[in-house]
Length: 198
Image: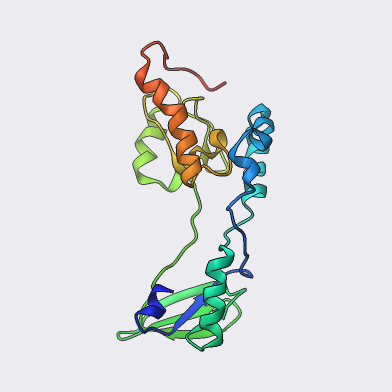
């Protein structure tokens, strides 16, 4: 929408059909409705599956999707859903994009490329920590103590990598608040000793 407002014609590519949702995960994940069962689950792999199921990939708010549909109808935006990008190559003056289904597009700029896999194994800053402090990793996510500390050291983790403790909303603002509620007591109370996950 920002690019269109600046005079661009935009091609919006997504690996699957665009989904319209008000929240990344159901509002029940913001409080005890779903979190109680999540926190009671002791199997880390089952927790990971609960996270994946609750988030169910990316989405857009109804208001944003309405704006995009209007831009599409006016010819300023072209949707390319179910399009997995196989390659993007700079050809001296333009980008050539080839999708797995054989579709080819050219563009002047790639404004935004999204899609993140949370995996501690590909985080360079955590390589030394993982080498020195062994902690179980489940589907790329570290098992942290209840205060979101990496096991064996004083490194606190927030965001998507804290999801096994915080839940499916770990990477958004409500997750940041929940993570802060866990971390602050460990930073302010000297009686909370370094602990093992439990």
